[in-house]
Image (cartoon, rainbow, N blue to C red; front, side, top):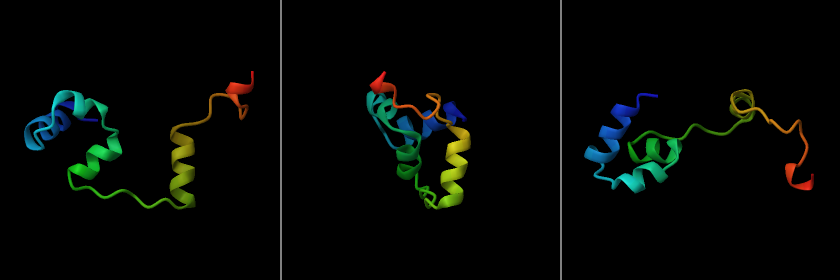
Length: 64
């Protein structure tokens, strides 16, 4: 990610306070900058699962 460009867009372009900028998720920031969210379909879910795999091996970490 090009953080300097995103910071300029958020802090200067959108005039967000730093604490508001840093509290945003990347999806929220992209939405505010005019980008649309990608639709959630099976292919997108598989893509996200590969990018962010479960680290618990499928176990509920709260039950341990």
